[in-house]
Image (cartoon, rainbow, N blue to C red; front, side, top):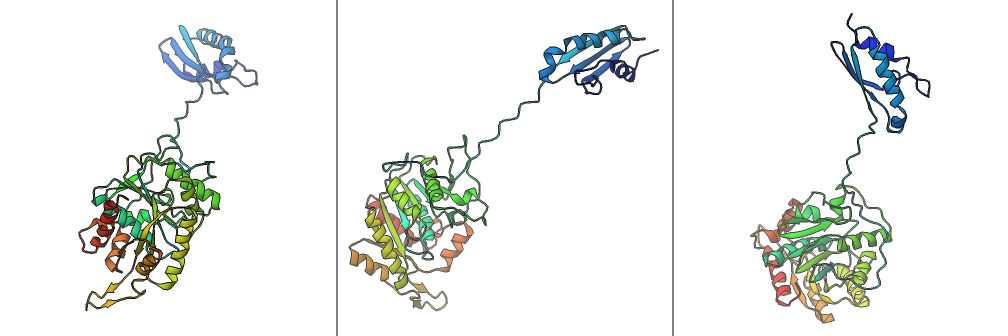
Length: 356
């Protein structure tokens, strides 16, 4: 009578292990093959039992060979461990305590660093930063844009970028490109509505990472969009990086100019050159009747620059198209709109002065 797989399992139950189970209960018997009177199977055991299981293999082979209907038996002993886990892709973490550094350090491959600052929020500093970066790129400059506004990163939306930066080794950060500009933002590492709830040292560490671990490549100028005010990020940038100079953005409104003066004073205290001021939302022209209105006043930033002996770099009008372009992810400076000329004028002035 031909032997069956069930017969073989039943016969092997006499082989007991040290823990009291038999080889069948332990699920060691695998790949049973019956070809006429020839039986083959595998004893698959944990790696730690492998060296001690050879007598059991021999006994199993003898038991099966003596069974009715079996001419020969071949038993293979294997002791495979679990398959090695595939290496996980490097995980990049942003934020952490800053690394000690006594001196200002250049950013590898970057010729100049321009900090775009404002004394308060809501004056359009980030809009100016993205458009100025694009305008400089259209002038043929190699431009980077670093969104250092950690708590309120808006450059991913304004530049139309949402992909997460990659990291080949968990340390190096590969930036993204948009509209001819190389860019990096903490916003690219987070969900769009996820808040950053960090204390000062974490902010400082994140800025150091984005300056030192991002592969910026060869850049003529790196535009740094600072958060509003005079806090940890501004101080860290001034202390840890060789900043070519700062540009202060303000509306012509008196309240905005009060805070702009504080930003200017901060740069004076940190010995950071101020390259000039930009007046944003300078004037509004009604698209229907052409009437020009000065909703936030007019000429305040220019007058302040003159009073302080600083260059006045230009005035940007209050235009609906600027806002719509930023919300759509294509800065107005990247288009052929006549409004783009205001940013182009500032870019040409910076390039002509050797500042970008």
